[in-house]
Image (cartoon, rainbow, N blue to C red; front, side):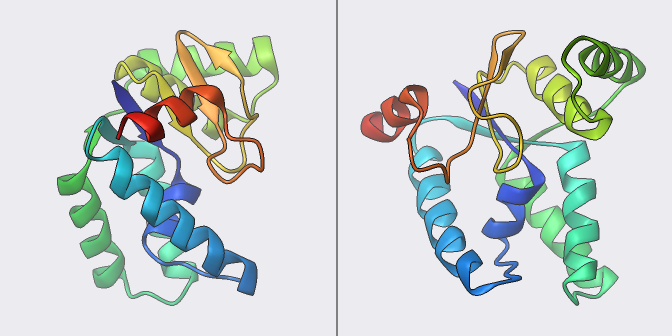
Length: 153
């Protein structure tokens, strides 16, 4: 199974903390990703890596440091490139489901990469499109699909 990681999940994985609450999220995300990496293929869509670069820079990292994190994550996880058909499919999601375009681009890229799950803190928990389920791994109620993966790892 392939599982995509949204930029906010990657930011927690990179240790970006903007509040005291984020420290707990960082620990939870790191533990979850470590466990999932044993049993699934983790994917970082190109759009999420671009967003992560901006988040890292806003958090005080130099361009060189942010680039190093991107390279590290690109090596650790599979990536998926965004193409014109991906952009058009994302526009369809915006029209059909009222998603924000950049979120729709991430969803479409993850689906195009064959991912069954997209872990995201800020997209609609439980939303399903094109065989892809969006799951908030930090939600109080663990989605059954994520619970099954955790149990299997």
